[in-house]
Image (cartoon, rainbow, N blue to C red):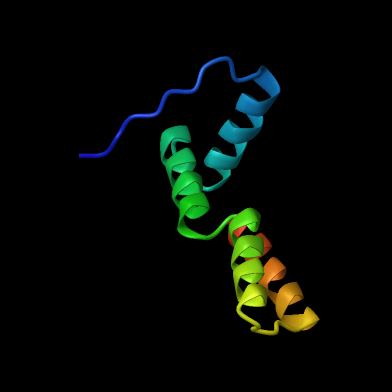
Length: 81
């Protein structure tokens, strides 16, 4: 069974934006937020990406600038879902 998360004191503007986005996707607010949370949890955070890069650098693994740009772009795109 899934866990329950309750968030209090969400300001009216934030609530309205989230309800509007949920409605635009024909979802309840709960379903929309659940999907957003699952997408957030599915990928690494920027801190995790940078930590992984630091570990690789410490092992002598080289990462090109383009690889970093691509990783950041991918992380941002996943965040837009």
